[in-house]
Amino acid sequence: MDKRPLASVNLIAVAPARDIHHRWSLVVNRDLFGTILVETS
Image (cartoon, rainbow, N blue to C red):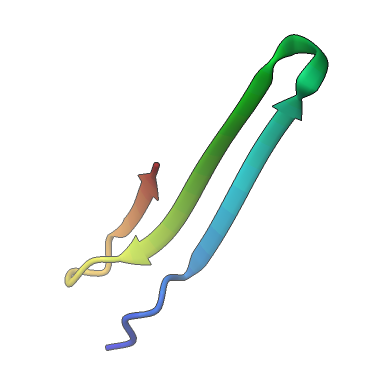
């Protein structure tokens, strides 16, 4: 079984005037039973 993620996305929101800097990461994988899992951080 391939261990690589199906999809990986990094999102960054920056607004210096409002002093905002956020970062998100989304990773989509399949578990052993074929269920799609979405992990966020």
